[in-house]
Image: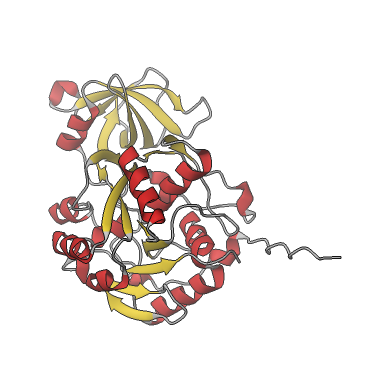
Length: 356
């Protein structure tokens, strides 16, 4: 009689907590994109590197997959018709000059209520009319009708939606550096931060080494910063984000696998995109995929990623990918060695390991 393998232990929210000195939260980017530090955690022996060493760590025939989403200036200020101040963070653009947005305001306006953004349409700004909640009447987001084309309005009136842990207001530096050098598809309210470390010189070195390149799109939403509030992580509801895996990328992945190369995802958003495509057999659409230890990865072999917030879904994802104990050890090493954390921080390289 054979005994079955023991079930993996259940993880709780507290398992993904750690103490982070506030001074390690990067408030500004490194002087050069590829000059950030890179913690090579792709093997049992941990090595401290500089990001521009990445080409030496990949092989000819490997495939780097980037998220080509473009951060839009989604944070816009205004007021209700009654004068109360408000702030919109536009999460998604819909047809017909309609948007879905987060709203900060002391008292929510009624359906049909008009908001005067940046002074309103009569004063050089634009109007926003509340149509209801989204995606349903109990949704946390708001469905709005704008008085003009949303992308043009954001570009003219909006601010870079810096993460809540960055203390300064957005600057011209942020408009350039909180954006990848290959950003193409407008729609994100948060950058795919692992890709911020790549500059044109590094991309050229990777190409010269024979590393292939492909792209997916996932419009990163503000929900990426949403804390998990339930100790039982299975009770957490993931936010929705729109993604697409182009046919050319699907073909590039198939060819990479066939030649024995490694699929290297740049960032957790790329992981979520590729694994959503594989799990649901859907090349585009909304995803709420929640990757926790025990998840069976089908596409991604290696991962370039930044350091994530305690108790976050992204900590759970990297733990599922590289092993919980390994990840917690890497974070202890990073903190002890003064690595910079979060969006403008340093990066690490991981290899997929068997499930814990």
